Amino acid sequence: MIVHRRLVRLAGQVTGQVAACAGLGLAVSAAYVGQAVLLAAALAEVARGRPDAAVTPLAWAFAVIAGRAALLWARETVTVWAGALIRARLRDRLVARLGELGPAYLTGTRTGRAQTTLVDGVEGLDAYFSRYLPQVVVTFCVPVALVAWLATIDATAGAVLGAAVAGVLVIPRLWDVTLLRRGRERWAAFAELASDHLEAMQGMATLRAFGAAGRLGARLAGRAHDLYLTTMRQLRVSLVETGVSAFLVQAGTAGAALVAAGGRLDAREAFTVLLVAVECFRPVRNLSEYWHAGYLGVSAVDGLGELLTAEPAVRDTGRRADIPRHAPRVRFEHVTFTYPGRDRPAVHDLSLTIEPGETVALVGPSGAGKSTCAALLQRHVDPGAGRITLDGTDLREWRLDALRAGIAVVAQDTYLFHGTVADNLRLARPGATDEELVAACAAAGAHEFVAALPAGYETRLGERGGTLSGGQRQRLALARALLADAPVLVLDEATSHVDPRAEAAIAQALARARRGRTCLVIAHRLSAVRDADRIVVLADGAVAESGGHDDLLAAAGPYTRLVAAQELPA
Image (cartoon, one colour):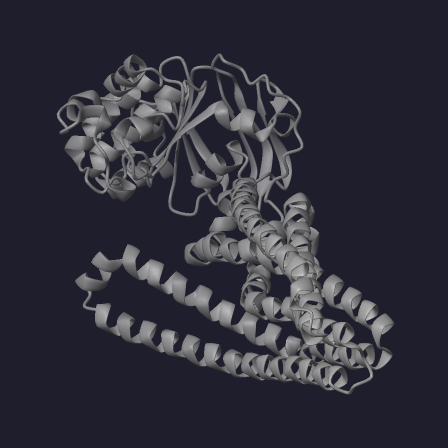
C-alpha cells in the first residue's frame, strides 16, 4: 500500500475530489455486495427446490446490476473530472512555483528534469490521487466490514477470511521499501535520460557541426539500457508482490468455499459466505490494478518535493503596488552581492545613481558585474549588503509582480514562443489593440518586416523565433518591451548577437525607446553605448570610472583600454 506522507499532505489541495472518488468507489462495492446477497438468496431457493421463489431476488439483483452500471459510469466520470482538475491545479501550482523561484533556480537545474517533473510527474500524481488513493480507502473499509459481518454468520468463515485479508494487505508491504527505492532509482534514470534527449534536440545543429551526433547517440543508448535494467529490477520485485497477493486471494476464497461446503451452514448462509468472500477480495484486486499509478506518483515525489520546497532566491514580502509611472530615479547604495558557492562578490560596495530619464551604460570586462546589476534591479536576487531604490523606496517594499511590471527588459538571448507575432507581443500587455502593436513595432523598427511576413502580425513563428533573423528577433523583443510601457528600461546586451548593419538599425530604435524612460544599458560592444548620457566602467564588481564617452577617452583609463581593445574609432 504505497501511501506517501508528503503526497498525502499534498492531497490537502484536492481532498474534495479524492473524497468524491472514494465515496463512489464505496457505493460501487456496496452494489457488488448487494448483488452477491441477492444471488445467494436466489440460489438458496433453487437449492431448496423452490425456483419460483428465486424470481423476486433475481429481479432485485438485476435492478442492483443496473444501478451499479450507473454508479460505475458516475465513478469513471468523476474520476476523469477529478484527474483533469488535479492535473490543472498541480501544474498551475508548479508553474507558479517556478515563477517564484525565478531564473536563479532554473540556472541550477536541468530543463529536461524540470519538464519531466511538470509533465510525467503530474501525470503520475493524477492517477495516484484520482484512482489509487480512493481505492486504498475502499480496500481498507470494504473487506473489514464484510469480514466482520460474515463472522456473525459463521465464526470460522470470518476467521479464515480475516486471516487471508490481513495477509493480502500486510505481507506484500514487506517489499514496499525495496519497490520505493528502486522506483526512485528508475525515476532518476528516466529524468536524466529525458534531460539528455531534450539537450540533444536543442543542440542538434552544434552536434552535427562537430560530428558528435553519433557519439551522443551511443551515450543515450547506454542511458536507455541503464533505464531498462532499472525497470526490470523493479519489475522483478513487483511481480513477487503481485504473485504473493494473488496466492493469498485465491487461498482465502478457497478457504471460504471449504467452510461453506462443510455442511454446518444452511443453503442461504453457505451461498452468502461463498459469494461475499469473492467481494471481500474484489477491492484488493482492483487496488493491484492501480498499484502502478500509485508507484509512479511516489517515484515522482522527490522531483515534485524538490520543486515545491525549494527556497526562492528572493521572497515576495513587499506590499506596495504603486510602481511609478514616470521615469524614476534608480539608486544603488553600497550594494554587495555574492553568488552562492562563490568566494568573491560579483559586485562590491557598488554605489550608482541613474537620474530620472537618464541613460546609463555599464561596460567592463566579462565578470565585472554588469549582468548582476540588471538581476539585482529586477530582484531576481537581493543584495547581501546595501540596497537599491526607486525614487527613494527600497525595491523590497514593492510586490514582485508590480516591480517587474515597471521594468521592461530586452535581453541578450531573446526568447520568442511558438505562436503568432501578435501573441508574442501581447505577452507584455494582453489587452493591447492591433493599433498599439503596430505603434510599438514601428517605434522598434520592426513593423516593416512584420508587415512583409506571409500573414503579417498573425504569422506563426517557429519555436524560439527560429524563422526570423537575429536582428528581427531583437527588434520584436524591443517592441514587446515598448508595449509594456514600463518607466524603467533595461537593455542587457541587446545588440550582441546581430551584425553591424542590424546593430545600427536597432540602435536607432533603442534611442527612440529610451526617451522618457530611465534606462540601464549593459554592453560589451562599446559602439552600442557611445550615445549614452553617462558611461560607468565596472571592474571586479566596483565602479572604476564614470563619465561621457569623450571625457573617459581623455582620462586614458580603463575605458580607453576597452576602446583600444575593440579598435573603436574615437
